[in-house]
Figure 1 (cartoon, rainbow, N blue to C red):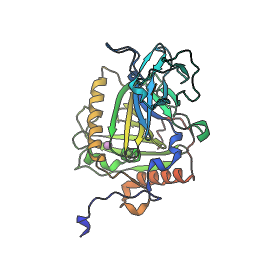
Figure 2: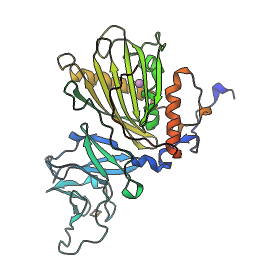
Figure 3: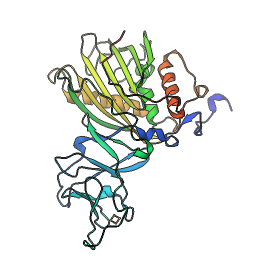
Figure 4: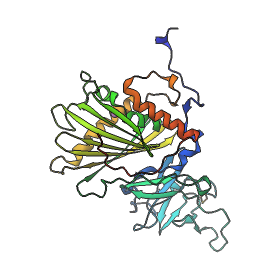
Length: 367
Ligand code: FES
Ligand code: CO
C-alpha cells in the first residue's frame, strides 16, 4: 500500500497525543456552558416549574438552574443521589430544584429541603446534590469542575478590558457545537494559513494565500500571536483589505481576538471554548465592536460569523479524535509556528512543567 492509500486511522492515546480525560488538570479551569439568558425562570404552560438545562463538560453531566429569578445560577451534577435520575428532567419551583423521579427537592446550595413521601421523616445523609462552582460573566454561565480537594480553579476567568468600556458595544453571538477536540478548535483559531482556503466563500481568497508577517510569543497565560491577514473585505463589506489581528490564547481554551481594520474599526471576539468530552467541544462567542448598530447591525455580524463557524466546522468535524502533541505525527511548515507553540504549551501543561497564571486580556497592540 502506498502512502497515498493509507487509511485514516485513529491514533492511540499516550504521551504523543492529548486525550483530555487522562489529565485532571483540565478540570481546574472555567468553561462557559450557556448564555445567562438560556437559564429560564418562567414556567411554560403545562409544566409545574421552570425547566433546568442539561450540559456536559469533560464528560460530566451537569444540571444548570436559577433557583430564584433575582439570584445567581446554581450548577450540580445531573444525577439524583436517590436513584440516579437526571435532575435536568425535573423542574424549578418555589426556589427549589425538584427531581422528576420521586419529587425530592433541593435549595440553591443543593441541600435537601423536602422528601414528599414522608415529609416529616429525617433526610438521609448524602441526599444533597453534588454542587459545582459557577459564576456569570460576559453574558455567559461558567463552571469549574474541580473540587477543593482537587485544588479548585487554577485561575479566574480572564478579565476582558473592553467589556466595561462604553466605546465597545456588545454583540452576543450564541454557540456552535463541534465534533472535534477543544485543542483542534483553538489551533484552528490561531492558524493564519487556513483562512484563504476554508473561508474562501466568506472572507478568504485562495488566490491570495501568502502571509507577510506572523509573530508569536509565550505569555504568562498562554500565547499571543499577531499577524496581518489579507481578506476580501470585512464582514459584509466589499473590497479587499488587510486586517491586523492580535490573538491571545488563555490556556487551555479561552481566546481573545482583537482585529483592527485600516480605518480604525475595532472588532474583538471572545471565544470561550468548552470541552464537552474527549472528542467534542462547543464555542460560545461574544463580539465587541467600536462601531454602532447603525454602522452594522448586530444581526449582520451574527449571520456572517455563523457562516464562518460552519465553514470551520465542516472541516474540523472530520479530524481524528486525538490531538497530536509529538512533532513527528504531522508535517509542519513556516506558517505553523503558532500551532507548534500551542502544542508545546499543552505538553507542558499536562506534564506539570508549566501552569498558566491569570492575566487580563489587555488590548496589546504591540508592534
Ligand atoms: Fe430523584 Fe428518586 S431518583 S427523587
Ligand atoms: Co476558521
